[in-house]
Image (spheres, rainbow, N blue to C red):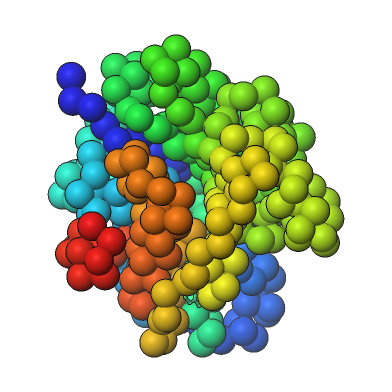
Length: 330
Ligand SMILES: Nc1ncnc2c1ncn2[C@@H]1O[C@H](COP(=O)(O)OP(=O)(O)OP(=O)(O)O)[C@@H](O)[C@H]1O
Ligand SMILES: [Mg+2]
């Protein structure tokens, strides 16, 4: 059996990306910078109002798996698509990146998930996600041998939105820990944290999750505070390791009483922030599973994230391995 560095589990989504101005967001009731959940009818409506768009495979954890593979790591992914055109695109892209992906697709109903992503002139992304086939991900989609063979199993907090994915995660975490592996999660989105705060805290405090990724607003939402320092102190007590990202201010890695500050890389022009957090997690976990220091894990995260925000779409179009070598990180 191959050993995987990182297995990721998430909502398998194809992104439909277009530019808009801030007025478009407010007149359409879209919460800026958030992941807005929408139904099929609203998806039709927003698409009819959307300007010329490009399609690209996405899904938070899928982007992280692709990032790990682009760095030269061995990655696997579980996520549910349907047998349709968007499903074929998702399947092609993740496999072409070298990621193991064998989750059984649905027969076309509901269709593959899509997220209409509106990018404002400041580079911020506002997502509108129709979950489609993702609602069918369940325990039957967990490949036990893959979980057992993965150094880290990483999943999205977004998986608490569909009904049965959380059962799959609990099973996967049990298998991972029974095999001496580690489990990581991302808090995903501050509104998602508000929806599932108690459950996310329980995942951490029960030891189901060892490593947590969060951005600033997600961390503050988790502890219902505006005091960032206090929140850092609390997450240090609730999980073994946390990496908290702060956009252009970089990130801070927290382990017990240790705090490791990490700089962001200078970015000439922020084109589209979609995937920044996902690629940070990819770089960090690639470093972590290859035994690097926490500072170097953070630097690899900053590099991968910095590269993806200089382009449209959430998956890097250049080799991250080459970029990391050029930056002296590999
Ligand atoms: N303007 C920027 N300049 C340089 N690096 C950035 C910038 N914005 C983000 N990054 C990098 O990306 C990482 C993650 O960014 P951020 O904290 O915004 O996460 P996020 O909100 O989860 O991102 P997203 O959800 O949009 O993917 C940061 O730690 C940093 O390394
Ligand atoms: Mg994020």
